[in-house]
Length: 167
Image 1 (cartoon, rainbow, N blue to C red):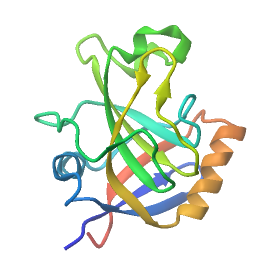
Image 2 (cartoon, rainbow, N blue to C red):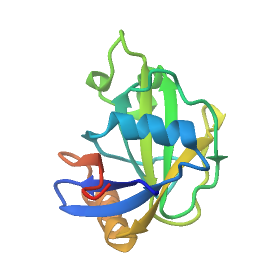
Image 3 (cartoon, rainbow, N blue to C red):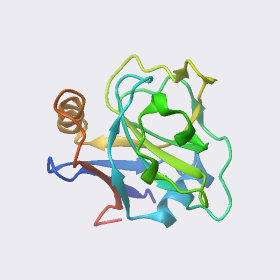
Image 4 (tube, rainbow, N blue to C red):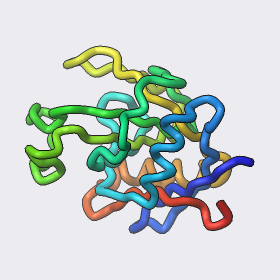
């Protein structure tokens, strides 16, 4: 039986529903499922193109490792990335309060809402992500809200992930 999660831009009041890819990314899907609900400040992708994401402290008992990876996510893909020391480069623009010295490993939970994404960072090269879910309902509305994050700003907006009510 499929498991579903909701992705919400809280201030904008927009949600979408995604199916976990348990067969394709079982370790990642389970790690995310066990961590729900989780939420954080939304950011709009600077390198990847049509992406919003949040950074949260590491939550998996054991990191899932690479599975179902891509560097060309499509609209509706939800990806999991883990980064260590991501706040060290001031060019990225993260507030130092987003991480702590004790917890250097951050998890990036990303939502891709449009086409032509390429996970290539000029500083580090290719950045493959684990595709752990796919949006099946509400992508058009969420994409419009994501575009508003890009053009209208991310300040004060929270990206939330939760188990779907009927999950």
